[in-house]
Image (cartoon, rainbow, N blue to C red):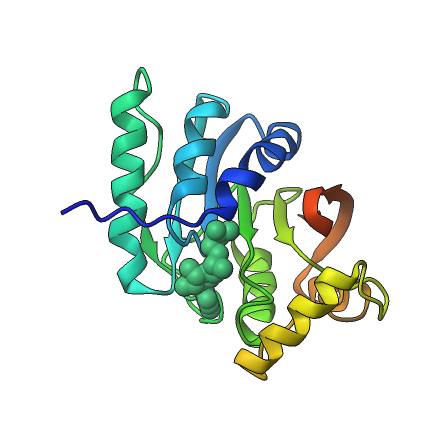
Length: 206
Ligand SMILES: C[S@@+](CC[C@H](N)C(=O)[O-])C[C@H]1O[C@@H](n2cnc3c(N)ncnc32)[C@H](O)[C@@H]1O
């Protein structure tokens, strides 16, 4: 049976995100992906990034891991020399202990609004623990800015998320994310506007 799952949005956002990763990732080391979901991002990005980077996907949902590994295997079969994707890890961003002690970069797309705030806070705290000094945490997704939605579509999305689960919701960059990042020892590096009213937010370990 083919374990691969498909999240159609990844086909639309993967190349704009890849362009950011190419500019923001270090030339070598371990890139931890938190909340890899289907694994399609990992399979697209890893073979197109610097040869000395090893992409390490993960998710808190055990049932996601087979799909991530299956996409990685398919990408490795296509890429000369393999796709440089490690086996997927079971990693709950909210947990105190992560199954990884050190990373040269962390990437996380579309998790912090589709999970309780503890996942976002845990991601920032974990990034503070495992990132090497100066290393980036790159977040992709919708954000509010200083108390305001950036588009009517994001406001409607936020309402639909909160109806599904009152603990979910589009997070506020200035009022929620940056203060928690500061506490975790991360400083804002840059904010890039992305298609469909999403942002790439780059934080760096002090
Ligand atoms: C909307 S999907 C995004 C998947 C992928 N990053 C993408 O952009 O297509 C959200 C993912 O977050 C994962 N997730 C939710 N809470 C999490 C947590 N506390 N730690 C790690 N992953 C979590 C879910 O299992 C799911 O795979």
